Image (cartoon, rainbow over all chains, first blue to last red; front, side, top):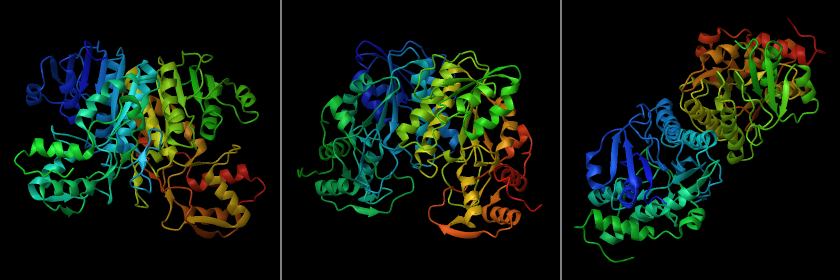
Length: 305
Length: 306
């Protein structure tokens, strides 16, 4: 689907973006935009990526072509300090990029698992149709809900087939996500900060599995938009991930209290994703082991999995 | 501004929509889009000089609706959606469909709610237009209205359509057949002498008098912009629930018995009226006067102490 087509990817620095650039940039004409130029990430990426420094919330989009076949909108304001900043980065930006690329065959809007309304059972796995409404990350979750709304409106107003993908924790050897950072920190200090709820459950998604999901998700794009959970196949407790890592490296994790910014429990139902793209290739145990081996090659690692 | 113009109003069979239609239908070419589910509402629209078109903004075809409106007043909302998914069809997709259909309008007014904010546990917190957004108290209504704001913000940018979002407080007054929850409490007090109060807090709000709202429509349309602007629609004063019912009790000669409940129907909602005051002037009706008039209209059998 993407092979030979012209693709715009926004938010080139995130882990999901890097996984997608790594997989697809060689096969298509890929353009990326992000608020600041990131020469390092451009060096990592294979050829044929054209990167522009554009802040979708504020800059004119004139330098950007309008004839993209597919738009992968991964950019977001992940830590907005006010409603206004969150609306600019998570809602208005969606409208601006959709308007600019109104002839695209499909638009993929990356949303978050943390838009779902919390339930009494922290291990509950949310389906795509369940209720929304959460106050997580100050203005993050609320403005991501307005972002989904913007993508819906764009789809209806401009006639662009759209898919909304609600991502759980994504992690992998490329590093940089909340889970990767926590693993790095555990290796360095032996300490694990608790998630914002205890027990907290997640459905982490390994970076290679993200790239596998991309084309099947784009194929689901519709008017009004389709919604699909981007999550792994398994629900796992945060503390269990670190107990497992502790067994691998023979070190008991020291649990610290949560910080306010940490993510609360949020597991997702992978049924729709599985029906589109098949079973996830990487279990969480193999995934965190892969992170450990790739990012900390000098740490002795037992074979307990 | 609306004089002689072609205006589309949605949800004009509800309380706020009816008050606005009553004011402006005589001076403009007004079209109504509503479900007309209440018996007689279709005929009422025609009698008022409105051209009615039957339909739901989120679900039905707009084939019978012209596209050349000068102004759109989007007041329709699903107040009790069963789920957020259902609410999003009516309260988020609906406004987008309407904007797409009326894309040449000079301005689009979207009525929203104070429930799009992150609920504060401070009982006298004042919500300004810039206060944090959130899931309100977690109802499907509040969340789907938050999505609705995202939808019209996007529509404004994509269609280059000046848009204003008006965040409504609790309104009261008038003889509309759908008594709102506020008036149901007043009626229950008149009947039983009892007034529910929240068990865990003192309740305050900035209720607005229904017939003041039409005063704000043209100034708010004039304030519409790209990206969308926001104006609180609320009274000028914070109302203390106990004081309100002491006053109503004084007018009708009956002392209220306050009964604590865990199921008090309103979240606290004092709103900052200053932006609305700066563009539309002070609210005409103070709450003491507004509740008097509301009682006179709805209960003409009572003789009120002056």
